[in-house]
Amino acid sequence: MSVEVRITSRTKSRVRYARRAIKPQPAGAPGRSSTGKRKGYNLKSEMLLDGDDAMYNYLYQTARDFATRFLDKTKTYKQQLTDRKLEVLVALAKEEAYFKRYEGNWAAEAMLIVHRHNKATAWKKTEKLKAGGVQKRKHIQDDDVDEVIQASSREGEKTMAARKKDKRNVPSVSI
Image (cartoon, rainbow, N blue to C red; front, side, top):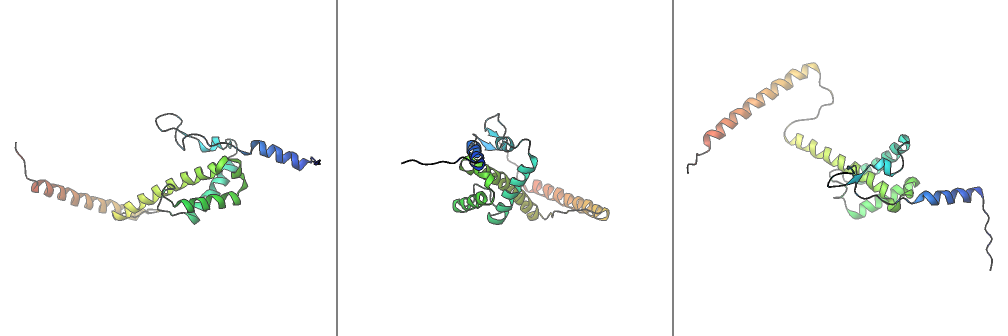
């Protein structure tokens, strides 16, 4: 039994793509320094996109879009449901074939990890500010600055008075 194989330019490009298709996952966490106790790597460098900012930004934007649509905004990547994470990774690989170059789709997952960590941290910070009665403002006008300064000084006076009151109510202990 003989098999006839025709080599075309398309076959050659597929072979070249297959040779560089699988890049193993580096050790450590994305975004961490390569020195110190908890080692990591630069995601852009490990994806071999150092000189191609446009491609890296496009891939990161695609990962961000999927994370925004399908993952819980209040949780980090690690806290997300495992099934949900797998669904997002599969959908992301289908949407952007470039991620198939990386063994086990680690580059897409690393982008999701970085994005969700940053967003969850920002969300928690915003919620903490809201709980304290502070609201984020996009632009503060000159008239508002005086009001903010006055309000903060009144709050400071109230806080100082409360601290003095608390100090008076604390019984002293002698040994």
